[in-house]
Length: 302
Ligand code: SF4
Ligand code: SF4
Image (cartoon, rainbow, N blue to C red; front, side):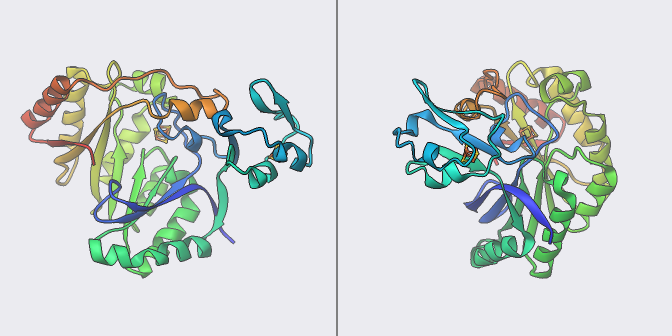
């Protein structure tokens, strides 16, 4: 039985492709962007999150832990991860959801039931299913199986990805996908590596090959001041997009914000982000006009 590690399934999503969508978030990403809004999606393993603000000291978690891994301290409940086996029993009994488990293995049949339940909204809105993450291409076998099942039912399929995977995987997924949403982060590879942990050579070459297929691609560019908002980077991004085969003239700009800071803290600060700023409205307008000069329509949001 094929299962996939999924950390969330969002109904009525309206920013992950056309119409009303069901978005499936895979857990595990081979990048580690310092501004990541879903830091809980980066580890490819089940994790446990603790929110001290929600904890009312009911200690049911301590009583229910089979491994004696929890201790009450002045800062709330502390887990000894040397002995915690992530069984999730503490989260099951927590009355306020101060403990939450992140990620569960879901068989394809169960996933398809959840997707089928939303099909009525796809039909009415021109929507469908979006596979996001984390990085969906890290779960290629499961992803392809789910895409094929969605294809049999004529659901519109979107894959939201960094394109950082083996080229064969990208091209196989493309056979079962109508639209790719691809993050283009920063064009200089050394800077890409500094901020995301990997260089971008493979990403750019995969995108060039993907553009030769019939798949629609929408690029999404997170705008992060000091990382990718310089005129030089925007020009290089536009030149790259214009070099691709097919009509790739629409992109989405996503000004970065720091909503994930709290999540980084709840994960125990292990992946604490830096503070990142979005460009001002004036700077964003300038970026839009640079893209316009290259014949590319850039829209904020999407
Ligand atoms: S690619 Fe996306 S999910 Fe992965 S670390 Fe970067 S922002 Fe987070
Ligand atoms: S996940 Fe299981 S082992 Fe870990 S603290 Fe909770 S109950 Fe104990």
